[in-house]
Image: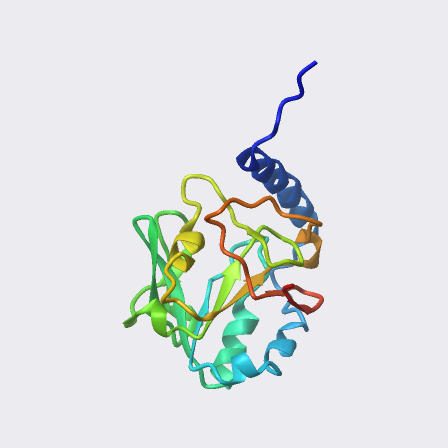
Length: 194
């Protein structure tokens, strides 16, 4: 009897299905997790001038608290804008400057475009993660935006994956193009990758 080897792509899809089901049972989009306050004590955040924050969707870790923290800390805030199969970043000074794009994702309506090479910290959405900093994104046809972004070695900002603690897995399947996170922020704590 020959056993079939499951490819990393198949493993990722299985994991996405499992974690989406877990997250659906848990998420509370209206609450701001207390763990956000751990960010303020990190030197890499205190020293940052420009911070990229994704705009959370229903069932995702709510990023409005990160936005408010950056406003209080007088950071330049940028948010991703989908452009073809790449991400661009525009300044965002008020939460109500957002509109829904063709993929039903909120992004800045206007604002100056910022070169990602000068961004000091990236808060990145994730669907699953492990303690080694491996991150599983949404996948599908629109997937891979952040992996493509971070494949550019000139982009040196800290990478902080953001999700709920229930999205943690023992090991996330990876492929060579997958970008690791330096930290993971959950509703429970901030985790430094090892």
